[in-house]
Length: 124
Image (cartoon, rainbow, N blue to C red; front, side, top):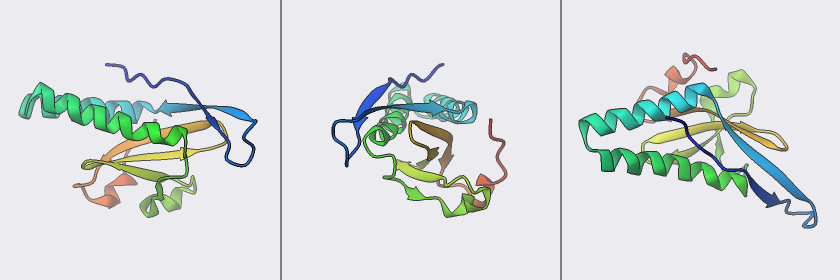
């Protein structure tokens, strides 16, 4: 199952005339996490709940188009020196980083797990 994130445009706050194109790129690890979350809830709860949670996760990422700095800095990943930030969607953290034109969602992490395990995850 592929996660589709459309391309959007946003205006830089200080220079209203400049329109920048921002892309959100989901890593393989993040896509696999969302798929696992979906399958878990589909088999244990219901398809409706699984779809609602998946939609909530994807919808949370859309706020990054207009404000990539809206997430808090993820202190548990500071040792990686990639300036990871996170957004909360239900029980999940969307771990991301960004530069001028790209936002990279590296992982979707269940907040009920031990935060130290974030560093032990394989990232693709």
